[in-house]
Image 1 (cartoon, rainbow over the protein chains, first blue to last red):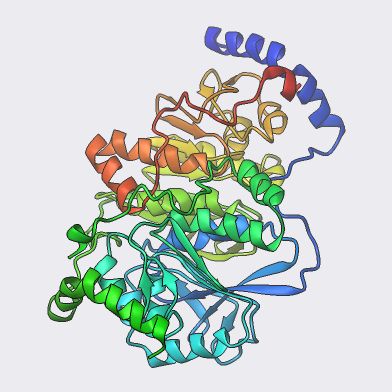
Image 2 (tube, each protein chain N blue to C red; image 1 turned 30 degrees about the vertical axis):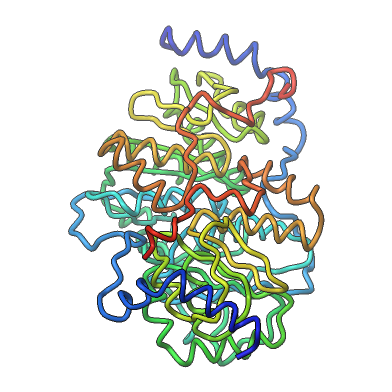
Length: 241
Length: 241
């Protein structure tokens, strides 16, 4: 044992002899993973080529701990979809075989530049939206919801670095340039990328409780920005024009 | 048009007529996606069943913007790996066909309880570590690195809610109970789940520059906790024992 290792060993003995014993004699209780439960509802993430990685998996991390909602993925043709950062995700459903989902989320990413002009995507969102409890988006996913006409007359927000792209999709949306996320009825839209995590926790508060949302954030060692009006990346109108 | 939509339209016209015009006449410039570049090095994420979703995809979001490193995934047998939150990711390599990677990252999640006792995993990490520039972990990924003996005599940290599990893997590690992440030579270990994002940005600062790391955080609308000593989820020794 090297001297530094000996020091480490002494430090460890003082620090953690009890948990080491515990770990050997009993299952380690930890809330890191979602409990195995039968979940009666579905929360579907709509994937498309070049979706933004964290837009999807930040909320998935948080929503994966909902008691009643199973997280599933859906894409136009099913199969494997590659994110903007090169991650390959196998989707659970194609648009054709998708059932009615209870909650829908569409992420942003460069792929939204294509999807706003994809009538199959827009029709799928319109059809699903007729039966959802919540229709949500992260980042420029709001641009696709807007193009599908789902946000007409609603308050909504999007990524502040792609503001003109998003807002140009539909002038009938009450676009909010300063908002971490926006809830208007069943429509919940978040600002860019990481903001999706804050929005996801707010939805957990809506669906279950404040206590649950705070616990999920704690388990994920995540510092929740829980004020939708606190937007450190808000854009000035002048800057976006 | 509904009255509310008319109001929205007026609001939008005042707010965004210029960007709307811009969006119609010129490509929308946005830094949301990583630029397409030839990347000469590899940063590999080691996946296993029941890995923690955000442990992986938070860092991937940030590291996806590195100039020189391609993000790849590797698992024991290759193929599709399911996360603790039920997401299916197709891995790029199996352990058998993996080349030497330049940077390695192993995430946490309930699956680490199995992997600390998987000799094939431990041997793979040991072999890869001989040639890496950096060997890194998020959350209880540090438990697996520790069990492989790679952190002997090194300062390291792990998830604060699975502290006894992690620290019990190797008493020769200088476990740090209060640290958002820890750098000791080429070994960089982060605290639980979301802390991996802060660690990932710190590695970008090391590999490229402070300016690049700050820009990546801004693009992701992420409020970077850039102080490794600022650990809101630090555990007291008494609590962990």
